[in-house]
Length: 325
Ligand code: GLV
Image (tube, rainbow, N blue to C red):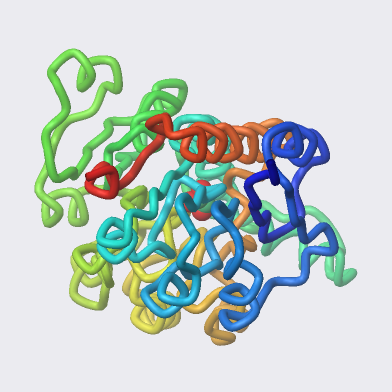
């Protein structure tokens, strides 16, 4: 009997291909050139399953072109690249990789917090440019992180991991979330619930950890930035589109807020070039979960989801149980 065919859309670790190869006939893309939407539809046309990344759009047009597709397993916790409604209607299972990237993403959020508050990348660029002529009392003065109020927007697993790390810095923590955490979890995170207005106006550091959806589109725009303290910093390692980048650029250049640390942008990788002109911003290329172990665990989890889904089992990280109906 011929094996079930699956496509891996981008380069993955060899062990992931080996594992998938035990179950499927695997087509891979180890030279890692992203497929265009048309190419993606073409390579998936005769496949039952796919291991995808966040830039692969699984939408109505693609699904219409791929009648055999049964499961698409994203190597990401975010899944705004999936049209889940259409996938469910066509019986295509979608999965993501929650949990395995919480620690790495929270650690990187702290890297952004510290780098932004202490102007690390700005100072390094200056040093590399040969500008360092001597020590000065007032050189690259930043803001204290210890004792600052941290406001966490989106208190899922990653937001909670960020909150737990704030204990070492003796920070009061406010959080804004659709649903309130259980009291025990609030205590564990040392975090107090707040409205978005309260959080924005009281926090010294605002960090975003909410998924992107129509509801969270431009959750932080000009009006919200204007509510923040002039001395505050904004940290964003969630998903491009949660922040109105043009409004953020205006706020950073006009002194509405002090600085920002950003790992995600609208329209990646062609982000707004005005960011490059700003001194008070730390920029990273969407790498918050990028440790070797974490990316390996994410890819293996996606592969396990694919194996389960195509074996007719309920995959562990199923996003659309409706598709099973
Ligand atoms: C990365 O951005 C992810 O969603 O896992």
